[in-house]
Image (cartoon, rainbow, N blue to C red; front, side, top):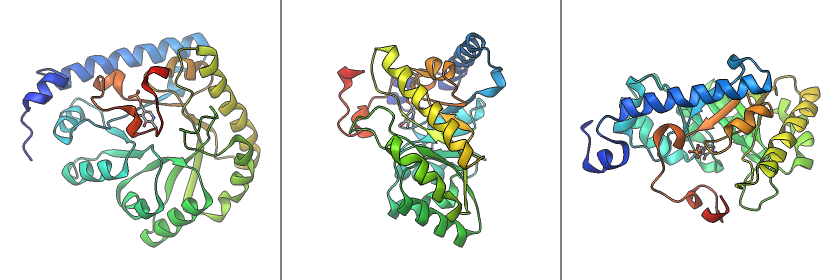
Length: 259
Ligand SMILES: *Cc1c(COP(=O)(O)O)cnc(C)c1O
């Protein structure tokens, strides 16, 4: 693979991407620690999952060398292409975006965790393919806490019935719940989404003791998420810089000026 920097890479990431990412990462860790401190939580409670979507594989090779070893990807096809190119590296792959059932077979080949479980047919197909491959998968159940049609995830009312069915899929190892908060400058509205997820988690835990974690918080809102109990924050742009693509690619109907 040609790992030399292309002109567009220098324009987007600078002449030394690994150094930029390392500095950004250190800043994000400092902010995570400060948020934990404010919330009276131990820093070790919160795991940072770097989100690598749109960052080209040749750049990710440098990020890996700089110590970023967990990669969160929204789209399975993009993750799969990168994994093909970076297959020699022991990367921990997390698929964090909505998954179509016909893509499950690819996920099962390389992903270690999946944050967007949102239907029984998907759970069934995952379990079937995992069983054929003789492996398990860490999963987070996605909940739509903002009520926006553009967001994927189970309706909050549907979560507990869904959780009671999880034992039917023994290859799925439930780890927690996942959400995307409303994209809003109004911190109270954002906070309410995270609070709802935490309250749902507390109830889901009575049914399935595996569901302890809360995957919530992105570059724009991870500190609020940590104050509300996040145990995994999924952070892309604060580490890798702004994305050149519209977020409408990931959230159909997403209107950038709502952000
Ligand atoms: C892109 C993405 C993130 C990270 O968003 P940033 O703004 O880059 O921090 C988190 N979660 C999901 C599901 C994503 O697709």
